[in-house]
Image (cartoon, rainbow, N blue to C red; front, side, top):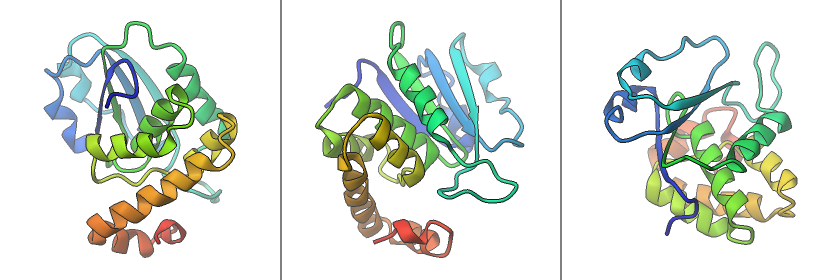
Length: 181
């Protein structure tokens, strides 16, 4: 089930080279502030690219840039202007957290009341996904979902933790441990 009027591809940096001939028309890049720009896009045909820079963290930390409500507002502004988008590539470092949160936010924006369906579609597009809970929390508030988007994310995290125990174990050893059921 397509939840947006364009195709979405989600990947990490090491996978960018696989999508140069996929008909990508738009790219959303989310990288750490100090990470160099990937060279892979030189091999892509002309496309529109938006770059956001913040760390994949879920709480404020010294000397790190956490995603803010303004960053999620920028995602929603992008989602409000879908004219001309045929195939959207969303990537971050690993294609697991910031990029998947962005995809869910775009799908939820277009489909009020279908938060669980947005996460089901995310699992279809990118089975190994663990959306950034800070970003989802901001989106829940900005979209006025009254906790429905956060609740759907928790269900998604439980599903992915069961399917990907190695990922769940890795997250349990990080600052993201509180997200793992």
